[in-house]
Length: 80
Image 1 (cartoon, rainbow, N blue to C red):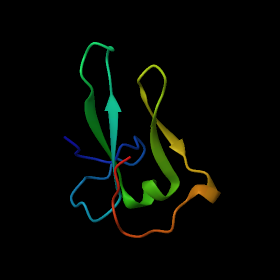
Image 2: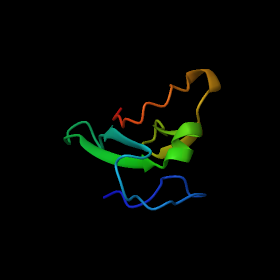
Image 3: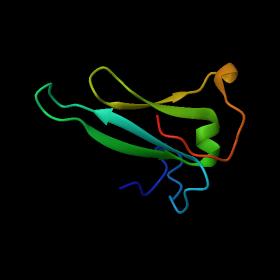
């Protein structure tokens, strides 16, 4: 369950879906085990500057977004 911003320096409480970015990532522990989906939320301020990526080892990482890759803010949430 998502309760706060994934950014450890922020930790804003998750109150509404209308702000920020909800990210769904598929994770597989072993090839024989079914996939599971994990959800992460970045508040509005953090989602404008950062995103969540999965490293090869399966750990989640918070990375800065490239300036030219920033989408125009539409106010909509999207899962990737």
